[in-house]
Length: 253
Ligand SMILES: Nc1nc2c(ncn2[C@@H]2O[C@H](COP(=O)(O)OP(=O)(O)OP(=O)(O)O)[C@@H](O)[C@H]2O)c(=O)[nH]1
Ligand SMILES: [Mg+2]
Picture 1 (cartoon, rainbow, N blue to C red):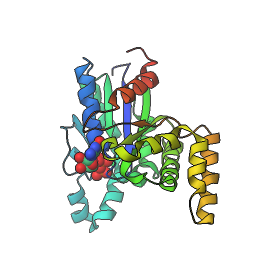
Picture 2 (picture 1 turned 45 degrees about the horizontal axis):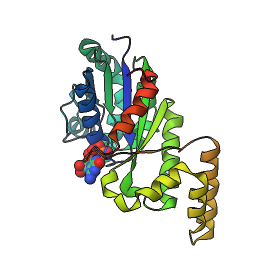
Picture 3 (picture 1 turned 180 degrees about the horizontal axis):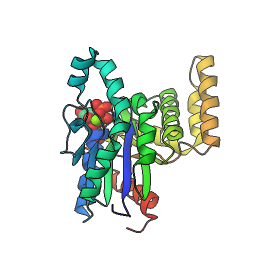
Picture 4 (picture 1 turned 45 degrees about the vertical axis):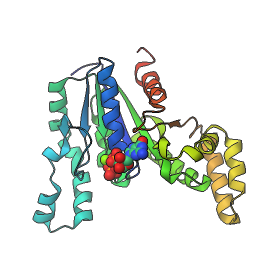
């Protein structure tokens, strides 16, 4: 094994742009002369915007699970997710053979199946790598209102609690939220700005709950400095790469 292997787990809600971001991280590292590889950990993925170097679908087949156990699409996805940890040895051997500098891990669309069941955290903690970091993708399209921003921040912090790695929060699809970007970045950079936006929520119960939650997250140092990126225009990508570099290389490249 490459003793300097850095593992980057790309997580986020369904459709938040994990797979496209994985393909762009791969290209970025290739362009800088490093040797990155991709690992697709989503047994349910049908089409990917990159050719995975290692693919969990080689070991777990959703259709076979459905036929063998008489499961529906959801039941088979749950079973497939629970099986990911059992394939760690095989996946590790493939990685050892490839011996990359970076392994970029594209995680399942259903974040709850990966982060909140036993298999995902087991995989993350037992994969052999020198440094590990999780990117959590805040779907730009889902955080247009301050309450939504708080609810996705909660999800991001739950993922951090479960995977227990360093975490970088990225706002994806920034090209689609152009009009709202300044506001979203304010909520992320200033607890005060977020709190005043939440006071404008008409329903008092939701306003109070979301303000309390936002305060707790802020007190715990969570949710600051979200990095806005677009995998389409590549805008902001240099900031994300710099944050990754600071986290996994202590800034050495
Ligand atoms: N405009 C725009 N679209 C994006 C961006 N990133 C992803 N998308 C689109 O969003 C959709 C979902 O992207 P994926 O990369 O498949 O997202 P995912 O999180 O891997 O999705 P699942 O694995 O199905 O949960 C695709 O149609 C992408 O082309 C972006 O930065 N800008
Ligand atoms: Mg995907």
